[in-house]
Image (cartoon, rainbow over all chains, first blue to last red; front, side, top):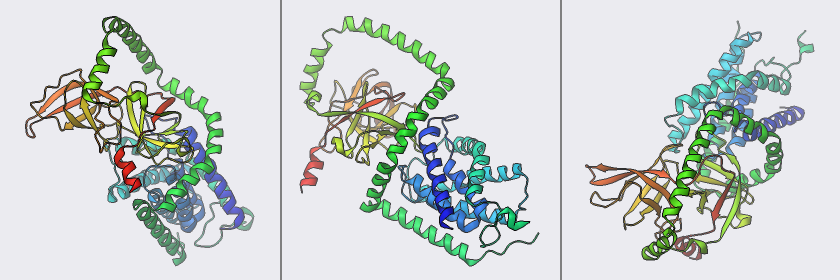
Length: 178
Length: 285
């Protein structure tokens, strides 16, 4: 990742983190807030590929972990995996995929990310993660975050230029493609 | 469609990141000091931006709250008006209650709460997690004398304890957390039990420590026991008994308890600057 791209990524991560902590923690549907940082990890995997997805996911998760009571590294682990996974999915599916399909894949990935977070938490015997509200958090959290997925994709597209990722090559811009 | 080849580089990156995460989790679980300090530093660095964002976004959050909870606020107002009427009536009939309470406190050898130093702190944020709703963030920390484990009270009684205090902020773990245990005393008896949380908006539970023969009644008040090992000073109101059930297997009474402390719409809380003797001794040793 080039220095310029790194600065852009850090700017987006900080902006979304503050929005999540200060705005969306108060705007809840059925008591559930959106998981914007997880959405950012997903979008970065989509636009940056597996390596960048994993790395950005790790940073997103780590910064969230700093403000949660759960162990440091738990979100980083889940988000890095999801970022990597979405990078692979983005490689497999066609690049000119319909936006609605991309949205559905992203929403499914959010649900998977939340499940992984709780699963890893349960494995290390972290209390309060799996509770009677888990189903509600999964469904509402995924759908609510889904509302912001287009914006998050736009942001990460700005960070990684275009969704032109191929293998481990540097992402190309539109002019290089034509 | 030809699938792009994935180089081993991306797998290597993932492996390194996963190992780093597991290492972080492991170190954090052991209470590795630099990680704790990193958390505190990160909180301190971002705090000015959060404060700024809070100034901008709080009105939006408040507007959302009043929109989404309009009905419940109306109901709450009606309920509060009813309660106020009852309380005014009650006050007339219980003029001597203060003296009676003082006598009772002396009898139970509870510490004088007026003697404890306290700090009033602003509630800066609710829980920022979907999975752990039993957290509040307050705008004061170790700089104001706040330490880990100190009791936090709101109007009506105990609501939680301090967890991971930073320099200028701290987290409050609420008593509604099912993993929180508090030693409580049933006022008017010498029965001491263990009170646990039961989730947001749910009554608290005392399912351990009260024998089936104990004379506890619905409506009795529970206060912190203030035993030597307890992190809380004695005598803080915690709840009122709503229901008394009998556990015939363990031959104990199970108490359903309505918390007396206010948990909703908190703007300020009071932190009691009290550390139990056992902690102080431990530190001295």
